[in-house]
Image (tube, rainbow, N blue to C red; front, top):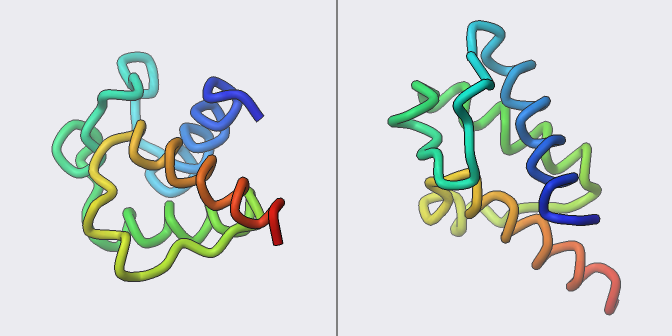
Length: 86
């Protein structure tokens, strides 16, 4: 998957978790909690839905490092590569 495809899917997931979200201004540099207004429950929902959508498992100890949309994109790519090698 390309970065854009991953970004679009994450954006779709974020919209499901936060229906009030205006996706027009969201970029890879968007900070999830600050710019999107995601609270901890919304963030957990996004992560869990991402795991299902991309067939990955994001380790709990990496969650605190995920602050931007680009962080999520990079994590998906890294975990998909790791799964492909297994």
